Length: 206
Image (cartoon, rainbow, N blue to C red):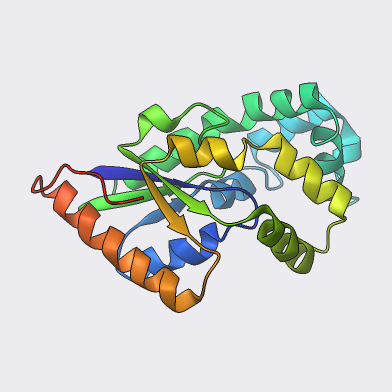
């Protein structure tokens, strides 16, 4: 199976693109969904996080307080690394396990931190969802009601836009309309089907 690693900065539209591929019957395994599931109450990962960062990351009912944890890891780089060392091995193991159950000609692993965690070698192709930094800021501000300071902190913790673009096999521009994005996804879908069938090993145009 051809494995495509879908990535992009916060607010670039990874979820929108994932849904377009899913509408074509392509399995999309989302790292964020798995990350959310493995830190639910009673899960071993939540115990590991609590032992590492303290009980301040918990809500009164014992569930994870994501805002408190976000405050810790995005203002302290060493703490961010601790979080990654706990969660990333669990997330990646689950993703590849789930993808292995599919009979689809190709599958997508949606991984926001694909480059940051140096896992691009584990996928067949890297697909970057790209938009301007101004667009990122606007979308995240509207969607998550975060302060500009927090949004900037998150963006700075991720690799740069230029790095993602220069290391991508394929790039989808999400600065334009949904209709344009759908057409671009159609083209990539056709290319990935050909690649998975061994009919075409050339790179789609960036």
